Image 1 (cartoon, helix red, strand yellow):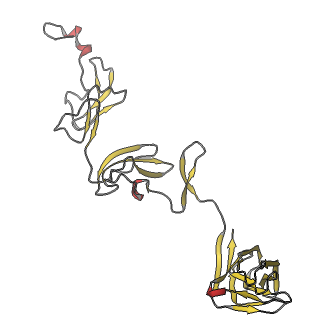
Image 2 (tube, rainbow, N blue to C red; image 1 turned 120 degrees about the vertical axis):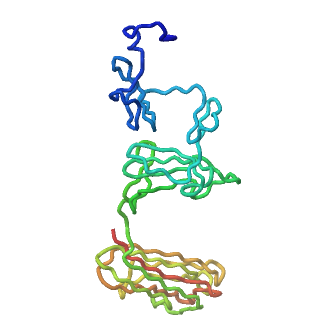
Image 3 (cartoon, rainbow, N blue to C red; image 1 turned 135 degrees about the vertical axis):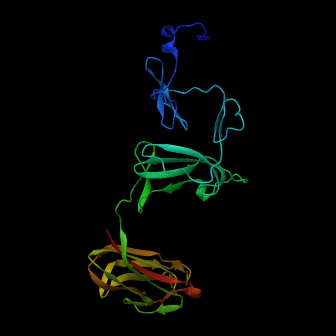
Length: 297
């Protein structure tokens, strides 16, 4: 209908749009825009907002936050915000342009969404002049429960979940030394300064680690080392062989993992040589270290 001039009400009222508000017109409440026989459209109007409940088609441009300048065709223009918006409701997301006052740097386009009671904000662009990512430009998370970790959700996505149970340190102790020491004993004796003490609050596991350099002063001779818990040997002796050159220093990283009873334990490293040679360690003041860790879980 091009004009109402000369038309009768009975033949035109169904095509007229209006809001039903007892003849009070548009106010601050969103109301359906209806035709003359009260068929609601997909548009709601108030003095402060418009709501569209159906598809929206924009054939020009869309400008958000500024009405002073017309947008270019086929663009969406967003005005910067100086504060973060409120967290979106569960299953929703929000996009805004930051001016750097709160989340993000000046010019960052941020997408924030809430899923599984966690709100996560991601920067969608790199605003730096050098074009390089910074830590806060990769992922910013809010409303995350302490202790939760980011995991694969099984559907090619990510989700925040409680960390799975695992070993926890109940107690630990380390001993280090750099002095040059040697032994000519062919029976196991304590290696100087290699003694640590831990207390297990309950039955658990123990991890023992040793790292140092040991060698025999006679070519082709070996050095043997073994962990001890008090007077009890743990595992078997470990043989460190000296090659064809005398005093050929060999790194000896050793470990032991086993059961540990409740209470205090003193662990030592014992060593011995073989007949015809002497065992040495920490040649040229290199470090040797013994570590014991009680693990629960």
